[in-house]
Image (cartoon, rainbow, N blue to C red; front, side):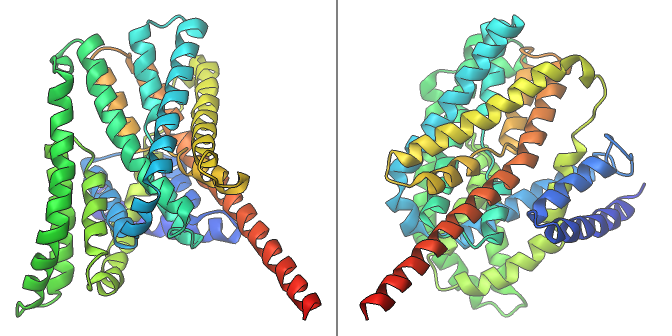
Amino acid sequence: MSYLVQLVLILVLTKLGAHLSNTLNFPSVIGELLVGVLAGPAVLHLLTPTSFTHYFAEIGVIVLMFIAGLEGNLGLLMRYWKPALTVATLGVILPTLSAAALCVWGFGFSWATAMFIGLILSATSVSITVQVLKEMNHMNTREGAIILGAAVADDIMCVILLGICVSLFGTGAAAQSQSVGALALPKILFFILMLVLGKWFVPYFLRFFDKLNASENVATAALILCFGFAALAVSLGMSDVLGAYFAGLAISETSFKEKLALKIEPIGYAVFIPVFFVSIGLNITFKGMQHDLLFIGLLIIIAIIGKQFGGALGAHLFGLNLNEANIVGAGMVSRGEMALVVANVALSAHLIDQNHYTAMIVVTVITTLIAPLVLKLFIQRAQKEHSEIKQSRTKIDEVKS
C-alpha cells in the first residue's frame, strides 16, 4: 500500500472515529486511538506501522505539544511548581516500586529487569491528556498547570533514572557506563538554554521574520522554533516533545500568540496529529498474548492506580479538593512515547526479551486508551460540583436580597 493511500485511510477513519466517539460522549481521541487498533495488525490489517507513519507521527506529537505550550500560561506553571514536582515524584516512585516488587516476588524476575519494567510504567506522556484538557476547556486551570509541570519533571526524572539503571544493570551498546554527573549536566544545560533562548532569542526571531517580504512568515518562524527546540532537546538527551513544548511556551509570552494559534492548529489537527494517535494503536498485536494475560492485567492495574493515586495524593497535599486532585492523577496516567523509549532501551540492553517487550507495549497502549476516559469523568465531576456550588451561592444571594 502506498503512503498516499495510507494517509487517505488514516484521515478518513480518524474523522469517522472521532465523530462516533463524540456522538457517544467519549473524548474524540479515544475514537482515533481505536482506529489504530482496529485497522492495524491487531484486527483488520488495513494499516501497518511503516517509516512513513513513524515520521508523520513524530511530527504530530511534536506539533501537538508545541500547540499545548502555545496555549499555555507560564505564570500559572511557575505558580504551581511545588505541587507539580511533588506529583511527579510520587507518580514515579509508586508505580516503579510497585511494578518492580510484583515482577520480583510474583513472577521471579531479576531486580535489574524488574526495575526497568517499573521505569516503563513511571513514564508519563501528556500528549493525550493535553487533547482532553483542550476539549474540556480545562487547560488553563491550576489542575492543568500542575499536570503539565509534573509531566516536565516526570520526563527529567525518568531520563536520569533510565541512564542510572542502564549504567548499573545493562549490557551491550545501550549500557555504556556514564557517571550521574555526565547524565545530569546536559539536562541542566537544556533548561538554561530554554530559559535564555525563550526570553531573548524567540521574540527577536519572530520580529525578524515578521518583517520579511514572503508569505506566512511568522507561521514558518514558529515551526522553525518548534522543530529547532525539539532537535536541541534530543541532542541534550531530553524528549523532543519537551523542546517543542518550551518553544510554544516561549511564544505564548509574545504578542504573536493569538495569531500563531490560529495558524498552527489547522496544520497539526488536519494531518499530522491524527497520524500520531493512529500510530499508537498500530503498535498493538494480540499474537502470543494469551501466555502473559495475568502479567499484563496486573501491570495495567498497577500502572493506572500507581499514577492515579500518586498524582492525586501529591495534588491533595497542596490544597486541591478530591475531584481536582483526581483530575491531576488521571492526567498523569497516560503513557506514550517516553514509555516506548524506555522499553526500547531495556530491550537493546538485554534486560527484557521480545515477549515481555510486546507485553509492555500492550500495557502502554491500553493505559493510554483508558486514561482519557478517566480524565474526562473526573473533569465532569469537578465541573458539576462547581456548578452546584455556584447555584447554591446564587440562591443564598437571592434569599439575602
